[in-house]
Image 1 (cartoon, helix red, strand yellow):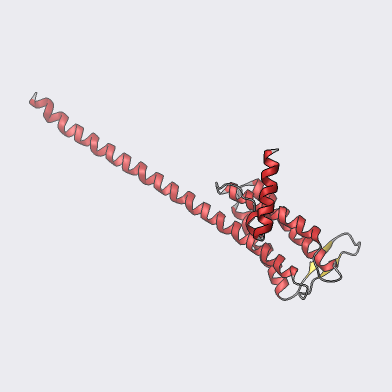
Image 2 (cartoon, one colour; image 1 turned 30 degrees about the vertical axis):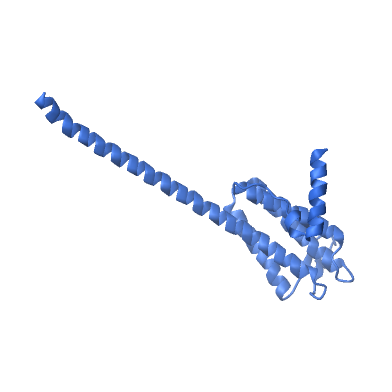
Length: 190
């Protein structure tokens, strides 16, 4: 019996040390993987936020009738691009840079597609603004930009594991937001 205890005691201790080391290593690996996922998610969030912010800043610039915006047409007249100078050019370049950054970090085809749609809506907004004789952006441009903005925001939120939201409910005046909530609730109840 003493021989059995003499052999089994150290053997059980070695098994305990091995098991403890294995569990510790496994736990550290899981923590490292969780930290890596957190860093990747935070980088995605920053890229999505930079892109959305750049688009909004450019649109805010375009909303001001005093800011100069023109268009350049291709010789055949089919291709039209906005022509900007100064702050406008810098803001458009910020949209392009943020777009490239976003496409480098996202793995979501939905986010990439919605980012493309938002970029097209922003450029269309700029062209419509340039073609407006009084410098006022037509309502149709707003109605095109806002759904594109919301679709991108919700695709980005889904990619980050967050629930979609209705941008109109928090980016509009309180009375209009209340009216939209009521309409949304009526539509859901029908």
